[in-house]
Image 1 (tube, helix red, strand yellow):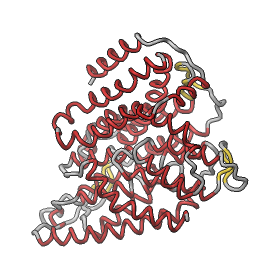
Image 2 (image 1 turned 30 degrees about the vertical axis):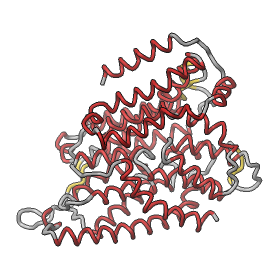
Image 3 (image 1 turned 90 degrees about the vertical axis):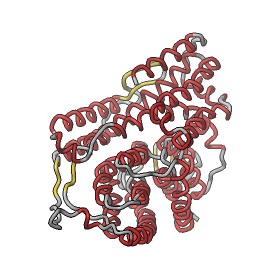
Length: 478
C-alpha cells in the first residue's frame, strides 16, 4: 500500500509541477466552481462504475487493486484540473477534500471500528424471525445515540453469529444496513454527521428527535414487518432443509448465558461521542485553526476531536484482551477496504459537490417533497454531509419568516424535516450512501456470507426502500 501511495504522489507531483502556480482566495474558488463543466464528474462516475462492475467481472483483480483504481480515477480528475485552474487551486481542493473531509471521516470510523471490535457479546442467540426482528429493533433504537457506525459495529457480529446456522442470510444483513446503519440514526445529531452539521448551524439538539420520530416509526414498522414476512418464509425453508437454530446450542443442548466481554470499551465509545460533541460546541473563534494552505484551515475543534478518537482507539487496543477480539474475529480488512475506496470517492466527487453548490439554488426546489427526494437521491451517491449543507443553505435562502432559525436563515419546519430525512434515510439506497454500509458488507463477507453486488443491492433498495420513501412523501410532505 505504501508503494501505491508513493507512486500516486509521485505521478501527481510531476504533473502538478508542470501546471501554473496560482494562489486563490474564496472568491476565486467560487469562480472555479462556476467554471467547472458537467463532464468533470466523469472520474466520479468512473469510480462508482468500478465499484459496481469490477467485483463482478474481475473479483480477484479488484481485491488486490482497488486502491490503485481509486487513485487512478483521482489522477484522471486532478491532473486536468491542475492544468486548467493552476497548481494552487488543485492543492487547495486536494487538501480540503482529503485532509479536512476524508481524514476526520476515516479517523471517526476507525475509532468506532476498533472500540466496538473490543466489545464481544457472548452467549447463545438463536436467529429465529422473532429474535432477528428484536436485534434489528435494538440496533435501530441505539443508532441515534451512539451513531449508525457505532451501533452497526456493536451488533453486526452478534447478528451474524445468531444466524450462522442458516444457509441463506444475506437478507438479514441487507435489512441491518437499511435500519441500523442508516434509518435508525435520524433522531439526534449523534446519529449521523449531516444532523450534526445542522446542530452546529443552529438546529436544536432534540429537534430531530421530536420531528423525525413519527417518520422513523413508520419506516421501522414497514421495514420490520416486511423483514419478518421474508425472514419467516426463509426460516421455514431452512427448517424444511434439515437445518435448525438448535445447532447453536452446546453439546448437551444447553444455552450459553448472555454476557459481555470488553465492556470497559463502552467508556471509550462514550469518549468518542464526547469528542464529536466537543468539536461542535467548543468556543473557538470562527475560522480559527491549523492553517494548511491558502484558505484551507483545520478547525481546532476537529483537531481535538481526531486526537481524542485516536486516543480512545489506542486505549481500547491496549486494554482489551486479545481473546476478546478473537471472539469477534477482529481484523482491519473492513476498515482498510472503506479507506481505499472512499479516498477515491472523496477526491473524484470534488467537482460534483462544487457544481451542486453553485447550481443548487437554481434547481427550483420550493416544496418539501422536492427537497426530500433531491437530498436523498444525491446522498445515495455523494457524501450526505455536504449534500445536506447545500440544500440547507438553499432552503435558508428561500426567505421564510416562520420555522427553525439557523445560521443560514429561517427554514420552514417541513422543509428541514425533508432535508434531514432525505440525507439520513436514503443513505441506505447504495453501499456507498453511508460508510457503515460498506463496513457491514465487508464484515459479512469475512464471515463467508455471499452479499449482493453493488447493483444487486440496489435492486433490494429500489424494491423495498423506494416504496417506503414514497409512503413517507405522501404522509409527511404532500
